[in-house]
Length: 292
Length: 312
Image (cartoon, rainbow over all chains, first blue to last red; front, side, top):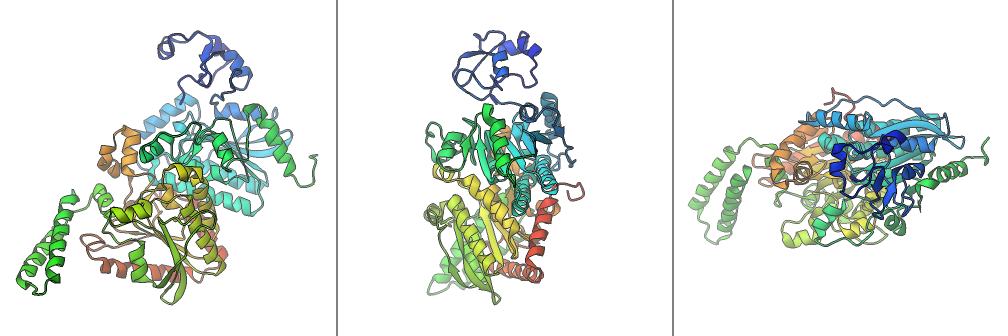
């Protein structure tokens, strides 16, 4: 994760507050209180400005990571957002040492029970089922619980005859759940195959980063695939590839724009156009034209 | 560590093979060596997970080409993904299995460096997965059961593979395989590495050879991610729960195919016999099911993995 990214649960108050002793130590010496350095253009950006612009840098358009909850709030029509219950799964199935503590840490840090949220909401009056992965929680990695959230969302969308939108942001499989994590790839893909067979609409929205087992399962199976500018999208991470082929990767390799160029993304959609784009795509897939 | 025993056995096998080729076979020496070999095998230790990883990767271990020759009749190779190229790291084709036409697909590893370069060490690119999918859809069209052999370190993490859509190819296989209306049986013969293995593994039945392993990532990769130290792979192997026995417990593997003492590569014929028995029995159980039943059974199998404590 980017160390310059602002605190996820930021309110206007906390944004204007002076950084704590620890934060000041971690940030670069030049950093001015209330400002953050954009990793895209390296300029100092007033945090309040970022927050006004859906966490997109006003100078260079760099998309800062946002939390799953923020994403849902940006997307949902007022009053339409309903978080759905996360199905319960056994925790720490492999009895992996230190994993429960790590999970707890991530929960404290993000205020989320797991790396994905599952909700129903309306976009310009059109209902949809939405899953959002949160890269702050264990790198958005997919263990049994995340696999279960995605699969339940697909099944719910099928049952309710609703379109499905999944925002991916993940480093891949959750290592601490081993082979059970790997199997979530098959589970989620199988659920989507059923959904597709029944004529369900699935919009896959790839955000930074979408790699590994997530990119090679549900994220790769959209009827339409959208991506946020600059998002890293690929199966193997850049470091692994560089180690394998023993050469430096070209600039922009595996970025959203690269994937669009090579035919794996339909359109790059900046965050400011996210809602209107999804609204349009829902509309054009409605049988019978204009919504009521 | 099993490595020492294995290298001693290799040495003996090599010597024995050389002696047997001589025009005047020195029988006494052969008996002596065979005695030593027997002793080593009798003293073959209890295998740790790291030992199994080592055995599962031994180049001498039978691979898809060996199984195809031993178990199937008149294998006819089919090549290419019809889009771009023929990926040598996946072998596919049609054959008779006990008189039943089947489609056979499997990861190809080499037995030496030269072969491995040809087969890319059993690490497919998207073209390999697309070839596999083409052959699976073809099998479905003609109502042929599909038998896959899994043995790969993983999908190839290369420039070209990424550019050509490694993720999409794997994801597509997972989705499409789940819907197939013909029986699918997958056999993990060596190492089942990550999504690259799973892309041939969405099956009605998953058989695993006794010393095979199947994991989310290689133990080296796992150790390197968790501890930034890939040399701690033996430790990682133990924590990852990647043996056939672990996977049977998780309900991911359905059956373990026994290997003789010393592993599949030491006495391949014993493994061919055991696998043949298991394959035929499982296939006969699946053959009467309708296409819809087969797809539902496959869906349900994966749907419940990891969701209840009892299964774990």
